Length: 122
Image 1 (cartoon, rainbow, N blue to C red):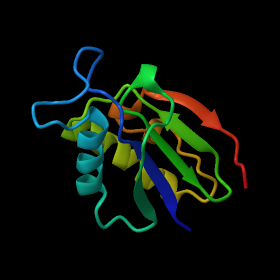
Image 2: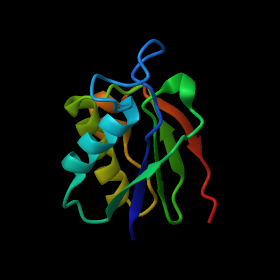
Image 3: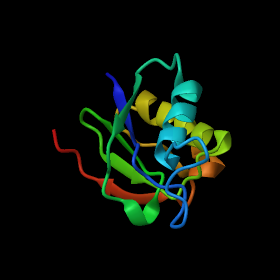
Image 4: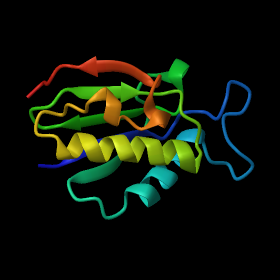
């Protein structure tokens, strides 16, 4: 069973800075960091989406899996540390048959970033 980690590629760096000096959005930068951190993790597929409609919580990601609730999280910075926290949580989610990750196992960098837990739509 594969979990999908979807990264919003249109998220801005900040209200004042939509793109960085290289012309990349915060979402594009976060996607690259997540792809690097998540490379080779069995059961995890990283995808991109041009807008998750969570603009107020920029640098957003959505995690979903078959017969599991989905999680929308945001307010991340496009940094290696935040990307690693997202990937670490996604790895635990992918390994869980029900998509449940005990709070005590959450990476510190994911705490306070969840926007919504969405019911399984399958």
